[in-house]
Amino acid sequence: MVMDQRVSVREGKFPILLIAPHGADDKNTDLLTEFMAELLDAYAVINWGWERASYVDCFEDKANCNNVFHLKEDVVQEEFLDPILKFKKRIRRNHQIVRQFIIHGISDMREIDLIIGCGEGNPPSHSCPQWLFNTFAYLAEQEGLNTRIARAGSNYAGKAKKNLNQFFVRWMPDQYVQSLQLETTYGLRKTEEDTLILAEYLSNVINKSLKATRETAPGDFKPTMF
Image (cartoon, rainbow, N blue to C red):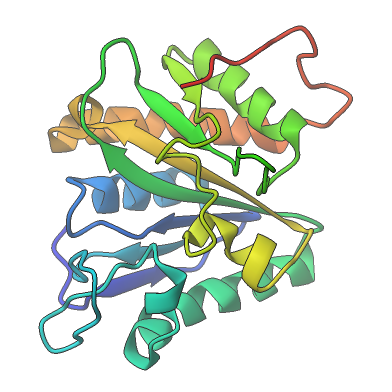
């Protein structure tokens, strides 16, 4: 769906916050996030119009909505960051934990469908408990998605301080926000039909992960690193 505004937001029912920072650039990640939000009845903040750039120019629709420094610029903050903060606060009023998923896109890679960024590094800056990202990888594999955890130093790790995945870790720390960065390969969202199928798979994984606990995590499962 083509949006008239640069950013759309969706009220949800469950403690899931879906964010698409690069919808204008990473093909159909905006549509993927919208489909998932509808399937999950989740909160969502979707960038349809801000084009990724190294600078902010609100008149030319230029900004990197995955860069916290850009998100702190007045117009970008009002349109994109403020709804995230509002929804986080709203979820916390009714639920113990906020599960945040930041939806990205990457080029096709051999035998990889999904890469999970969780703040791996040296030292790590994990954006959620280790048992949770291991469980998510396990559930994604069970759903048929060839899944990897982004290793320390990877561009997909979601560890850099300016990365949106680190916002509730290093900028506005909140232990009740558990965040994962999901990198989806191009072939799985090439068309609208492909994107809807991927949305169904990922929604199934997220639904199952909501019921997971440290005690039920698959202790003998070791996710593959990338």
